[in-house]
Length: 139
Image 1 (spheres, rainbow, N blue to C red):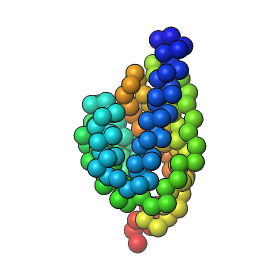
Image 2: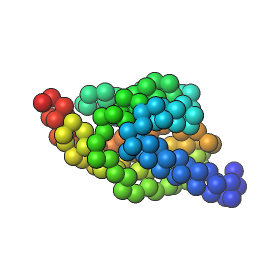
Image 3: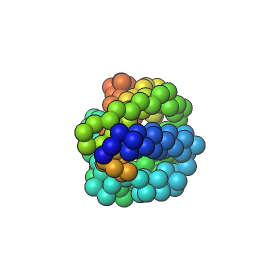
Image 4: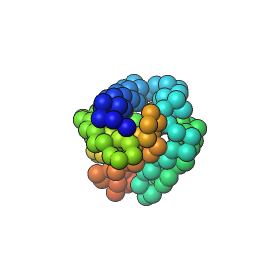
């Protein structure tokens, strides 16, 4: 892939990540699910900390879409703080820095999106304080 093509993919990837969080912030679960089905590879993976309710890995755009539809109604105070990209030899990585409230606990996270071509192949979430989230979920 040429540098010009790579830059076009980078720009598109960042725009898609921003669009996803815009939909999530608005609580538009059906639109979030539609976005996932349209932009994630059939064998894409979603990984969240194993200790959290709903944590672990999901594989497949349809399963991720179902999870994200439900997540859209449970996320409060979500703010996309910044988005950064990094090209790699086989795709593009986009890092989203988010602040959110889950189950009454405020935290921040880095969510690492990997794009191969035009499709999301993985999304990995790294939360700053999983212990606080777990504690709030048990209340």
